[in-house]
Amino acid sequence: MAGPHGAGPVAAGLSVVGAEAAGLDDIGPAANGPDAAARDVAGPVLGGGAGWATSPTMTLPVHRPAPAPVRFQRTPGDDARGVRPGPDLDEERTWFRRAFRREIAAVAADVADALAAHPALAAGADAVEYATAVRLYLSAAGDGLDQALRSAEPGGHVPFARCVSAGVRRLPVHRGVAYAGAELTTVDLRRIAQRRVLTDWGFTNALAEPPADLPGTVEVLIWSATARRTAAFETADGVPARVLFLPGTAFTVLQVQEPDAGVPARLLVRELAVEEPPVDGRVRFDALALAALRQHLARRTGPGTPVPAAAARRFVGVPGLR
Image (cartoon, rainbow, N blue to C red; front, side, top):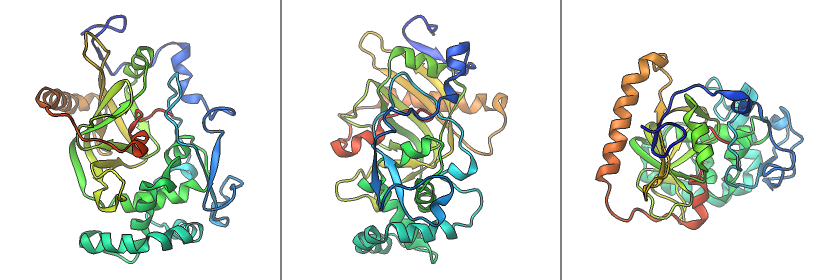
């Protein structure tokens, strides 16, 4: 394999080195960056902090691909995580009902039809609320939610994300290859290659089928163990092949392939299970996943599955990057 100064695959798993790389995790939201431009969702701007429980409003940033150079996500506190520690979501559900009352009414018939077609998803008194949250996330109402979660800041987006997460957990599991794209430079790829683990605090959107025309300069392949298929709740102009990884999912970088002689740049990663052994014990799993991804690439044929232009931006990005 070529090293970081030559084209070709770069071995991943090294720790971040150098003063420039060492500070990447500590970069907060840019005051004048893409997160500064925001739009209201379900009400006026929320004051911030933990006030979402009594103020049913939310602000989401305009959804844009991550800016260059790459910035790695900070680890959020418990009050800013899209998956709540513990099973009690009473406050989040109350907030969701108040904040999205009009949107809930607008999609009620569609959600009821989807649950009737998939009885396994309809179990429990809260099934309709969680299914509705997923449906809204997959629509324009969810644009910007992932960027808000990746800011590591508390706010009204947190209870929305937690209700979505509860609904996503009920969906069928996708095991195997998932696809995304990324707009990255060679320098960005080399920085990513130095990471051992990437943790995404938003929902990682990927595709269970190879895409035909996804934007970006880098093809991202993910070996999935727990991603959920969203086809049951996709909108009419949605993406039936979409899969979602829950906020807080970690991925290990298996290989970074720089562009060379007509071969596109690629980033190969593997989802880490929560119960996996320490780093030294993961070597065998990494080798198996890398072999499976390479084999999949060698066998892949056909033009791929088209992705609607309006939805394509959700699939452009690398887990763990802002």
